[in-house]
Amino acid sequence: MTTKERWTVYPLLLLAIGLALRGELVDQPRIEEGVFTAKAVVCEELAILGPQPDPEKVAPIIVHAGRVKDGDGGRIEIRDSAGATSIAIGTTAVSRDGAVEFYDTKNQAVLVITPTGEFLTGEPGGKSE
Image (cartoon, rainbow, N blue to C red; front, side, top):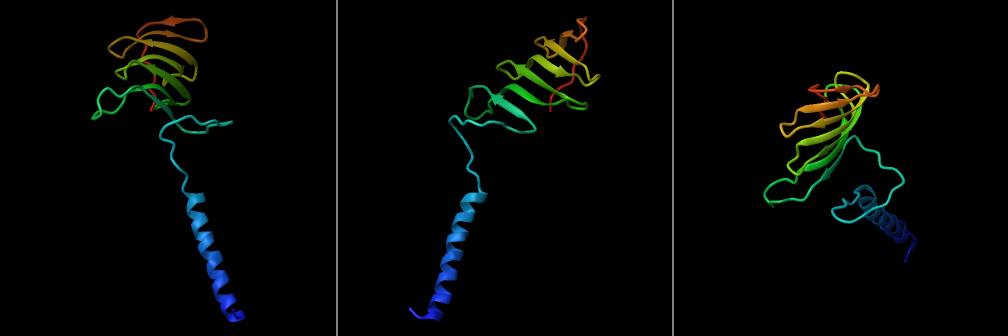
């Protein structure tokens, strides 16, 4: 192989290898099933889905952690199999104070426990986004 041929073939070879590796490094594979381990997970919202009763319907969210809608702070909501909130822990839309809220079957807050130990009834809580 002559010097001119080497100056043509080797840069093209390195370019082809670089383009092939770039596609694998940029596009991260999506984890569909299985378990993964990480030291930290940073996200804006976390949703845990329940079992999917019907293949045509979307599985309900049974645990949701995220930002309070129309307010500051965050909250964790634990929901029933239908997706209705049962218990919420975090800040409310009306104040920055934390609270534990219990909901009835109509998705209305029936009991709110505040940091001062107060038990409030019927106070609406903030919903997660």
